[in-house]
Image (cartoon, rainbow, N blue to C red):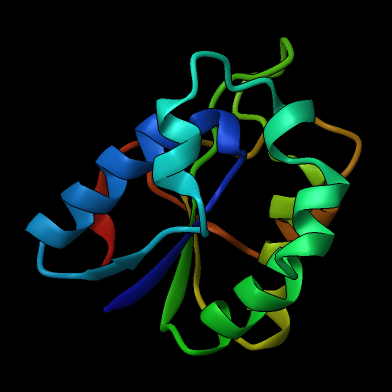
Length: 137
């Protein structure tokens, strides 16, 4: 399966590992542009790495829409951030919506977070993996 990985760039080191694990399971895994670069930064302050300037300059939102369109599914890597367990940020929510509208399966690495837009996430009917990538078929 061709899987586009989505998540906060704060999680870039973990997302690289998830991509590696998916490939070991026989999948094709695609990560957002600059994930490797973000993973090497001393600090992964989301205000710095996920700035509007970077998103506009590199057309990252449209670019990843095209990646999602060309893949079979998305995997949302959600983990604790800003004191929120299993955090899903605004950009990741947009990517989930892209996948939903394109009728692509949405896998979530961890359970759905308790956030203001939990209902919207639930309505997209993600498949919660509870950290077990072998559940992706």
